[in-house]
Amino acid sequence: MNKVLNKVEDNKIRTLVKFTYDGENKRHIAFITKSKKSWIGCREGQKKKKKIVVPNKQLVNLIQDNVLYKAELIPMVSNNGFIAIDLEVAKFPATIETTIRPDRYKVEVKFGNKVIIYDPQKGRQESRKLLPKVMELLKSRIDIEDKESVIEEFYNAANMVLYYYIEYKNSLQ
Image 1 (cartoon, rainbow, N blue to C red):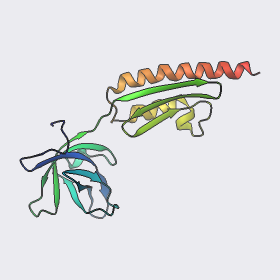
Image 2: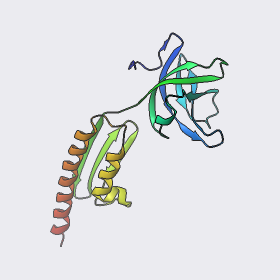
Image 3: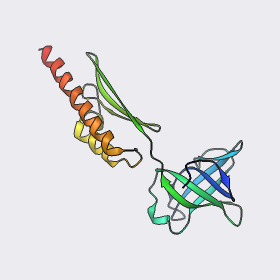
Image 4: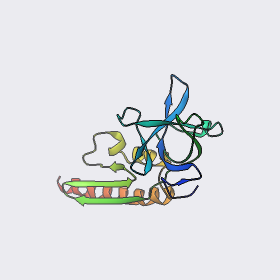
């Protein structure tokens, strides 16, 4: 699919959408709204004027809930919404930030609008405090570009942070 989003070409629209499962109609749906000259994905509950997006039959079984997709859409014959004819998971480059100070020990993996944090010092949830849980969370993500190298870099940074945090704790005793 062409990388240019929000481009209208031969009645096709390219934009980002996130599908959710509609239990009442037993199908995945998404919504888009017109913003100036382009169409953008939106939530069903937003008060903006919006149109529904449904996947074509070949894509129905491939869709995962709450995953952002690059979508190619065509208008429905009834003009009530759009049909997704091509979907690709939107993947984002990740950056890793490491903080090592006596008052703070953490590693942050940032990609898209998401941040996954490993914080052995002040993490309250297991998914932040325990390295295996954070690793499990990173491995489960399908929206990270070059995921294997990101995981490797994160693992090295997290072990360094853990080492210095343990050294700091031991120095206080």
